[in-house]
Image (cartoon, rainbow, N blue to C red; front, side):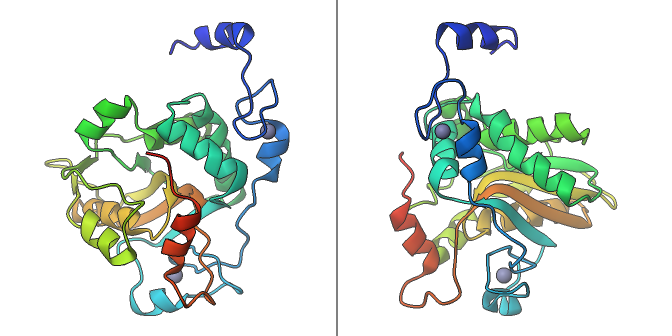
Length: 252
Ligand SMILES: [Zn+2]
Ligand SMILES: [Zn+2]
């Protein structure tokens, strides 16, 4: 949509908050502030919330090898979950710059040099079906605000994967193996890269992306997402990721 058209449309059809319905914004100031942030007590590698900052049990044995670390800004619930679903499944692209402010604020609070931002790509078929890539919209807003080059061609999704939401952890890992590849001939010497995505659950997709960038020569790769599944170390009866997904199954 043209930039000049948005204010006109907002005047004719005033935006409503996707969470509480209040008129005036796609996500109102109160709901924006209400989004629960993930604190410093996380696993320093996979970024999952823990009771104290450290290394989670899974990462002690199976860290995301190609990634320095994964970070998520908010928990995937409440207004954040609702607006991320509205963006992804209901085409509300106006939410992307609003949701990107969480990423921008996080990066300003945790300064680190990155040579490039790389959004998690969609398979061309999926992209055509949805009409846009939500991760690319988020990364584009961050790139503009922080003046970091956006690289949308470096990573390619070469395999059409089944939707991750209904799969178990092991199925997810299987599902994304070899789903991504670096662009043919891509050479990344000593590049520090930040991968951007909307939501991370197990981190399997981000790890697969990082692996492809590492193949191309990137030396330092991090990942940042707007939201993160809440996985507690004490949940033992059920895979916490699956428990979480039962609660928050995205609409197809
Ligand atoms: Zn609201
Ligand atoms: Zn971990």
